[in-house]
Every structure is written in C-alpha cells, then in structure tokens.
Image 1: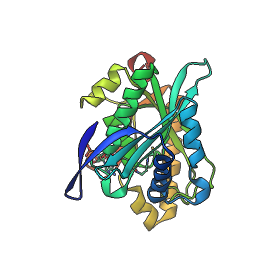
Image 2: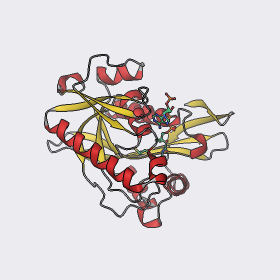
Image 3: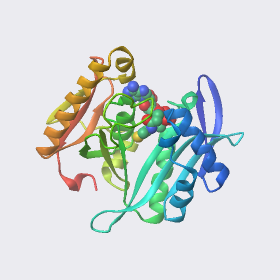
Image 4: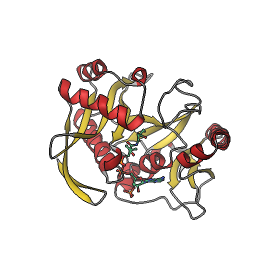
Length: 262
Ligand SMILES: CC(C)(COP(=O)(O)OP(=O)(O)OC[C@H]1O[C@@H](n2cnc3c(N)ncnc32)[C@H](O)[C@@H]1OP(=O)(O)O)[C@@H](O)C(=O)NCCC(=O)NCCS
C-alpha cells in the first residue's frame, strides 16, 4: 500500500508493509529511541520483535521512498480469560517530522486489515489519558472504546520523556474491528447523543509539564478519580472532543451497552 504524507510542506511517498527482517527490527529500535527518548532498559529489544512474529504477533512499518522506517505498529498475539484470541498492540510510533500527516491512522488501519485476514475480532492497546492527541486518534478517528483504567500501570520507572515525573496511568482501548461503532468512526460519523458525563483533559499536556509539574500531577489525579468513578458507575468512554472551545479537550461517557461496540 502506498500513500502520500505531507510533513512540514514536503510531500513524501511512503508504503506500509510487515517488518520481517533483523534490519527492519533494528530500525524499530532506533525509532523508539527517537520518539520516546527511552533509556536502553525501556527499549523493547530486537529479540522481542523476532519472538512476537514467531508467536502469532506482527509488526507493521511505514517506509518512505528511500525505504527508511518512519513509523511502526507492533502487536502481540493474546488470549483473554475465556481463551478468545485478540491482538495486544504494544507500540505505535511515528517520527516527529512525519507526525500529524495521517501515518498513525494508516498503520492502525493496516493492523485492522491484518486482524480481518486472521479472523481476530479485537485489537487492544493502552495509552496515557493525559495525551489528548492519542485520545483523539484512538477514540474519534478509530472508534476505540474504554472500559478499563489502570493506575500506575508500569510503575514509576519509565524513562520516556513523555511520562517522566508522573505515574504511568493508562486507559485500555478496545477496538472491535468489525463493529458498526468502528465503521462509523472510520467514515467520520460522530455520536450526537448527550453524554452522561464528561472529563476535561489539557489539550497540550507537555506545556503544563514544562511549566509546573505540580499542576501536571493535579491534572493526573483529577482525571484518574473521574475515570475511576464513572467506569465504576457502569459508564464507558466512547467519545472525545479535541477542543470544544475552552482550550481543554474532554472525554465523553455513555451508558455501557456492550452490543453497541462488539
Ligand atoms: C501517536 C502517534 C503515533 C500518532 O501518529 P500520527 O501519524 O501523528 O497520527 P495521525 O496524523 O494519523 O493523526 C493524529 C491526529 O491527532 C490530531 N492532533 C494533533 N495534536 C493533537 C492534540 N493535542 N489534541 C488532539 N488532537 C491532536 C491531528 O490533527 C491528527 O488529526 P487530523 O488528521 O484529524 O488532523 C504519534 O504522534 C507518535 O508517535 N506519538 C508519540 C508516541 C505515542 O504517543 N504513541 C502512542 C502510544 S498509544
């Protein structure tokens, strides 16, 4: 599949294909270093990419016209407690100079195609609830829904520049790839019914973190307690507004009716 990404005014052709060689995997390691600025200990190592493929998972890469990796999506094969298969997508990353050009969405769509081919109905992943861009991508553009909030999922040892100084709270995204909910989201349809509850989140968390880490921690505690409250009341998150006018973004909660999404 070949598409065109416009980054900083420079159109560049790129294509998406499965990463299968040690050279491809080494490029994924380098991309992790650039995107997350991880210490070596936090980098998912090359042997994990090899094992993932051999155990039913897969890594998709976006390559530019010089065959340079500019983004990748990495997914593990997984089973739920009823032994139903799903994919656990562990990383999605796009080089900074190529971000906001649609490559992240294209990689997720390619993951979805892979799931169609293998007959797997669900792809899951986690993301930081304070990252408005990821929320917009996951909930609005892709149609992911959230029923689970993990407090300090990876502990406090993350060396990622995106997570330093805060607990590693994560939202667990369910992406039921064949559902009407996902098809609607992919065709640009938005829910118009009134949400039961909303949770504000800053549009640019990185600016707050640079300015005042105490303020950043207060945001995290506010978002955490609101999510835990609404999810425990039987609501689920299936909507997001990137900038409803007041500067902040916000998560939208609805009554949970499993039939709607899976
Ligand atoms: C998350 C990531 C993979 C997305 O890739 P990408 O190629 O930039 O994504 P896309 O261009 O397909 O979509 C991004 C969308 O977010 C929007 N966006 C950008 N900043 C935003 C913000 N602060 N709040 C809300 N939406 C935002 C963009 O406008 C774009 O939407 P549009 O196409 O409707 O304009 C990439 O930004 C990245 O590598 N981030 C760092 C690593 C990371 O966080 N990975 C994900 C962990 S789950």
